[in-house]
Image (cartoon, rainbow, N blue to C red):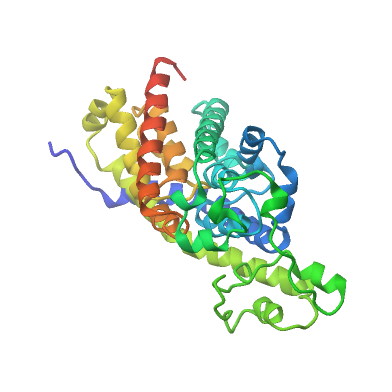
Amino acid sequence: MSWFSFHLQDFAFAFLSVLFESVPFLLLGALISGLIEIFVPARLMTRLLPKNPVAAVALSGLLGAIFPMCECGVVPVIRRLMQKGLPVSCAITYLLAAPVLNPIVAVSTYAAFRGQNPAEMTLWRLVLSYVVAVGVGLVVTRLRPAQFLHPRVVETLPGAATRRTAFRFSALTPAPAPALAGGAAAEAVAPFSREAAGGKGDGAAPAADDPLAAVLESDLAPPSFGRRLLTALQRGAEDFLDVAIFVILGAALASVFNTAVDQRIIELLAQNPWAAVGTLMLMAFFVAVCSTSDAFIAASLHVSIPWYARLAFLTFGPMFDVKLMFLYSLVFRRRFIVWLALGLFVAIGLICVRLSVLSL
């Protein structure tokens, strides 16, 4: 008997089941991300953080509950937040934690694991993701931004090129923008950076078909609520289309893995905690599924895959996968990206293997 036997009918049934369950959560997450990008001023996040470095990093790991973001959209957002004065260590903690520690992912994880201890699995995912993200953030507090941030990003930080990852918000607050006609108009436009409006964030002209960017580039009145809402929906639609292909590919790979691979191979893999955890993390890296949908793929894997290996899949994937590797290059130096990947892989792997002694 061959170790691989593909049957189209079995594959189609498994594939559509995963896809139909995950797409609504993906759409909801993309829409909320678009609304946050346009309507929430970045300075609001800095006001929520305490002055103490450890406390600020710890709280940054929980901001995803207030500002939920998919990992596909959080990279450009944290770049803007750092430009507006958010400490770099807090931004990185939020970058790693927000894709998991938010209500959408909690609900989707619970729904995906119905009948498979959903409450325990959801709690373990949230706790482990938080601990790892905060740990990375605390390490980053010991580094200077120029050591790990891309030079183009360092140049945009207010005073960060020569400072450590400071928590003195007053020192990191950028200079006020020139006032538009009327103080109220300037305040209304303040939450929107050129990049948030569709530009490149480096002085490039905005897209010609972006109404909000056109208004921001001109010195006219601030955009109306209707235009902001339209732009937010546009951002959400773009995020959805950008990541939908990865969800489809991930659902297809998981369905093939679940229906075509000989179960004896799967059972052999599950007998060794190290092999099970390592393989599932590598799978999470290459599958590159959105955090709002990956729980459905993890839950659809064969029941012989232990829970702690699935936990490794659900924790490592939203923090580092093949698509994030390219997105991170927009913000971080290549050496830091390599060390981040290795550090996350080792830390999450060791923790999940240690959890193998527990039953769930």
